[in-house]
Length: 112
Image 1 (spheres, rainbow, N blue to C red):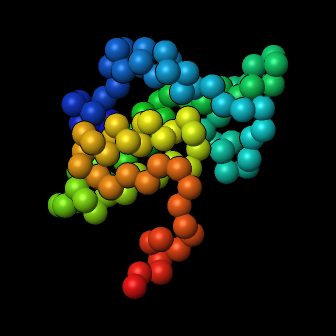
Image 2: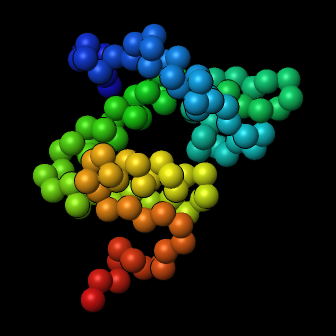
């Protein structure tokens, strides 16, 4: 996907940051839909995520977000405690709408 655009290629610094953030470490359970993103499995059973595919998905998401004209139309959500800070920081920098913590089901589909 990003093979023809040199500016979107992962640099060694980008890969180092992904490794330091431990974004390559998965769980011991692997769903059949996640199997395509798994590089290999450690001896303790933890799956190692393919960083090349992770980078491609990050670039795809970035391109989608950039294509949206009004940043307020972007909504970042995390119901998990460890993702709430990231959602709030992302929303401040991008100008998106944050939903950190629990939210009512139907928030997007049941507009009044």
